Image (tube, rainbow, N blue to C red; front, side, top):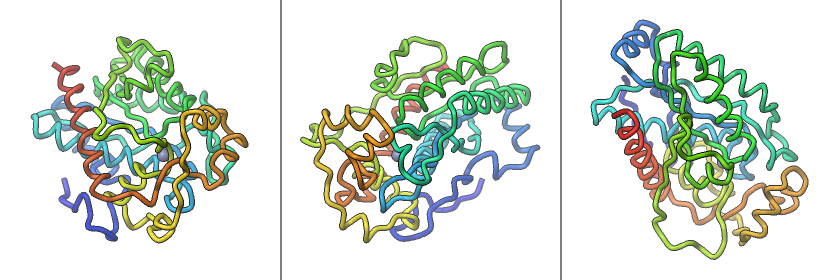
Length: 282
Ligand SMILES: [Zn+2]
């Protein structure tokens, strides 16, 4: 494949969401990769407001960067993979009262994902792994249901690679065949305030991989939200309630973001995912 720079230097144009995916391959290349037993990787994002400093495609860019890193690490282990172009018509609940947070019904998302899984299965893919780019409960429940429905009566086993904490919150059995739990040990002791949405973490990853679409001057001028677990519980009630808790559309400390932290975070997550995948594929 091509050798475009990833991550790009600060301020440079980052990779497109198609970079290193099947969308940049020809059909004989895809056919040959599947014939060699390549697994399929797919990220499930959403178009959603991410404050005044990050683009609405943030939850598509970030998991795309994560999967490119996973693909590289897998290749180094001799495991071939192809990345399906990212899904981006996910379910919005928390940010649903903001403009540009597209509201797609869970059943529509599920059926579309199932059709893609079945199509890939018909092409010969036997193992398909999805990751989420968006933490809305309903979005992740829809992914799980789509994995189960897409695997039923299909030649492909579809599996949701998901943070253990999220699976627990959703009440999904960690041993279910359609999930692969992973966790990344925290780098630092927990901060007094939470960083949940469009804050330090997401802004850091965007600065690392797609700095050209970050409004960096705006980000640097944003005050931290200084919100805690009670505010998070309120925020999760969705729609107008969320908008009242975070009128600026972000929950955390975007001004503290650094590209270095973003790069490290993606590397650590990708390494944890690849560890799990090696185990699962063995
Ligand atoms: Zn996000």
